[in-house]
Length: 591
Image (cartoon, rainbow, N blue to C red; front, side, top):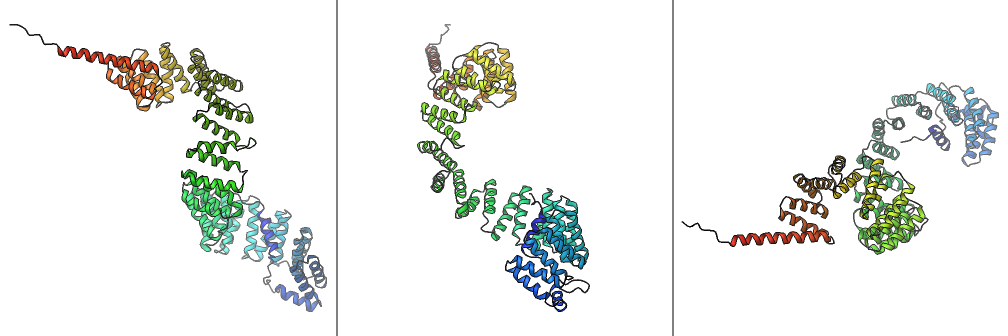
């Protein structure tokens, strides 16, 4: 929470706009201003007439005319300090502070115990950034009138502007000592504590101010900010809502309440706030967008689509809102409409690349590979060479079994970032899928060299060795290290089981592969490996069960189907043999 710089100047301007010149009775026999002026009329002939005329002209905005009449009053009665103070006030309205200063200094020379002159003198010094002299003037006013609240406030604000918080706090505490019901004293103490980051202390002072007057909207708002700073979000919301009762048209405050309710996942309550903002012209578009996003979060896609569409009716070029609309169509499963909206976003818009990525995924899911590739190419044309877009393009090529194109793109990406471990890993995986195992091994080694803790590369290399039946001890070490990094990775556990299988440690293989199957019950490769291990230890029925499950999940795996058929035939043959044995008559020993 930041306090406005130059509080003193701010208060000073308020002081001027309201003409806050104290006309309280002077101490020690000095008459009130009106009586003093009347006295001048007696002693100086018509000084009071000119003074009254000056006040009238000033109230009507005739500043120059007022100055002329005040000067005439002073000419007739130069020893009346109120004439000098009022003339200074008019000069201040003209922003002629130095001229005003002259008359104020004259006023305190004439009447050294005239408090209003010292207060205004302090404000002028503050405006002229003569802070030490301003402090002296305020302290003089306090010495003359120890219960003058304004003097304490101006002095405290000045200390605050100078970041002398300790002195400011001392002044405001003195003010509270003078008047325990001083709302301003508690308020400024709260602001200082907030500025210093002492939000719990600030909270205490704000609450004391509210004990005196519960309808102080600015205090409620700042108390809410103090609650926010302390992460007391529920209290902040409650406090802001009280302020909204006093300022129902405060759009910024209502928006803040809505945002906090969103943070608390109180979507219906947030919706109420933003729905109210939809009725206000200058906040309508933003509110409609937020309402749409809340509906989206609630999976009320039709309502979200309506809000976003209405918002686009107001501002057709609001491309971010169009992006939200397209995303909603996508989530609803209306891919054609989603793609149509994404395609409307122009290339000059910052969200264009993200839109094209969405379009690419939509086309990829629809099997329209060429369109998906074009969408990514469009994104690359706008964004330029980008490794993430290259990886995405490579994945589309891979799904289309265009491995050479995928590999070519990834090799281009490495020209941009030759030391990017992830790019080497992706390229290595592509080499493996393309049957280029030696290149895959080299790419994985490079990945591990760049990032020795790359669990996936460690696993990939170890599994490749195990699959080829080479470097099995090294494979075991690689996979064991990978598992220490990702101890609950079903794929790595599967690799560990497979390397044990290749090493002939079948019991260990079964144990690890069963564990992998618990993590990945629908992974055909894991189930096939477990079936192989069961078969190795003679558990043919269990092996058959694993092969059948794997084959259903990977219907295109011809080798698995052949393996399954061989096992079925083998089991059938075993059963036939067993049946034949059972049909043989037992031999009877002759006695």
